[in-house]
Each structure stands twice: as C-alpha cells, then as structure tokens.
Image 1 (cartoon, rainbow, N blue to C red):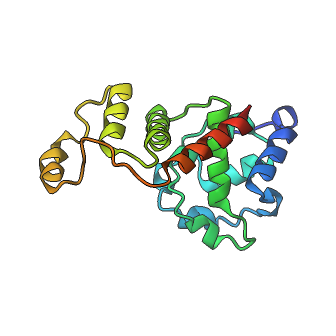
Image 2: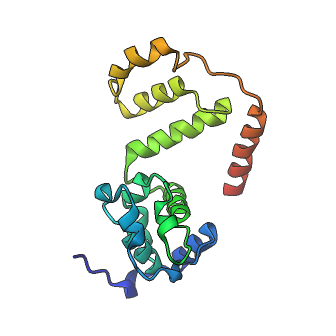
Image 3: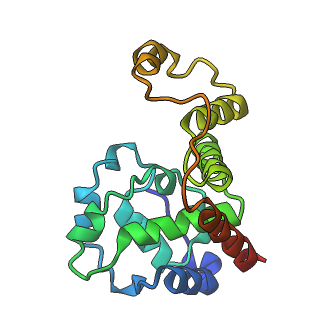
Length: 185
C-alpha cells in the first residue's frame, strides 16, 4: 500500500477546479465503494474509482491526472447511478480526462491519439469519417495492421466509406469547436 503525505502534496486549487468544472461536491463522497463495485472496467484500472474520488478529495493532482483509469472509463454511468450521494462520478471522470489533456498528462498515449483523431475528424467533417479516423490513428500510432482482418467482413457490406459524407449542420459543429478553442485561450 502506497502512503501519501497529503500535508506536502495537497493541492486545494486542483480540488476547487475539479468541483467547479464538474459541478460536483467531491466532499460528499464517503467511500462506500458502490462506484467501484458497479464499474465494469475495475479489473483494468490502475486506481479504482472510489480511490480516485478519495485522491481528488485529498488534492492529489499528479496522481489522479497521471493514472490510466480516467482514460479507460467508458462513461457508462454505472458509478453515477449507484452513488448514494448523487455525485455524477462519470461526469467527474470526464472532467479529469479534460484536465489531463489540458495539463499534458498522457498515461495511455494510444487512447489520447484515438480521441484526438476522433475530434479532428468531427471538427473537419461535422461527424466522424470512420475510414479517415482509422487512417489517422494507424499512421500516428504505427499500428498499421490493427483490425485489418475485419476489412473483408466490413467493406463488402458498405459499412466504411472511402469518402466522408456531407452532412447538414456541419458549420454549426465547426462553430462548437471554435467556441471551445476561444474558451481555452
């Protein structure tokens, strides 16, 4: 068991930032463990959800933002549903991912590359262009043969297009990205 001296590493600004962005009061968590018990990905986490909640309460920014768990969370909201104090834990995990991106923590580089490729595709095309997303992800990660065995099954069914589809509302989607970038400045 790792012992953390919170008198030296407590970051009150981190706690305030997490609470402000998530609009959740993390101090309400009393470590019942329902979130961890209901999470389908607990087996893959390096830090269980209930311990992440405790680390946030303890202001352990470095430990929380550098963990793999926040990137593995599927946002299935099982944790949120099970919380007896109505803490939206899934939203909090999402905020932690955003903060990790903003402060350049990169615990799972392939997940970050996938997320970046996904968002770039949506920004450019108004929705995700699957073939372009796959090409960008494979090029950036060097995983050229990942899932290529699925091609003979998917391509004949027309599930993947070689050209992006034009959609209505593409300009509105672009405006969302512009507003986000302006807020980050």
